[in-house]
Image 1: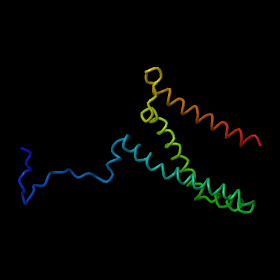
Image 2: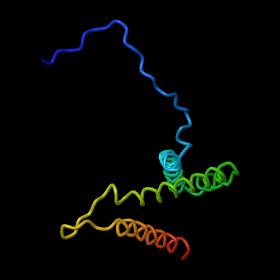
Image 3: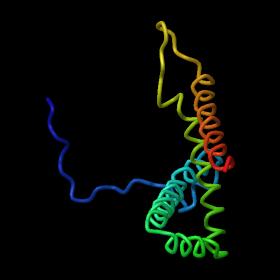
Length: 138
């Protein structure tokens, strides 16, 4: 009963519509997805720059002074500004996706999406305020 279909030497070709390489530019949700994925590169760049800064700080005053001089270059400042924008995009889009990725139930009922998203933004605000207080108090 479950016999394989007969072998044919020439299989007909199926019609497949050509898709542009830039298909993701056509709709905002696709573009947002691609930008969010590309923002991971900016996040990695920011982490690397922070690790280099910590290393320079630990290496001594002259190393840190050289690091500060290097990051004042216009190209590095522009790259940092673009990276910052992408890191913001990354954080905001992932905070908005958190309720989909993390379903919480309390008393058998699902916690509303805005509560999870709001908690993420509140934690982000508190962490930012603490860092700002630490930096600006001195």
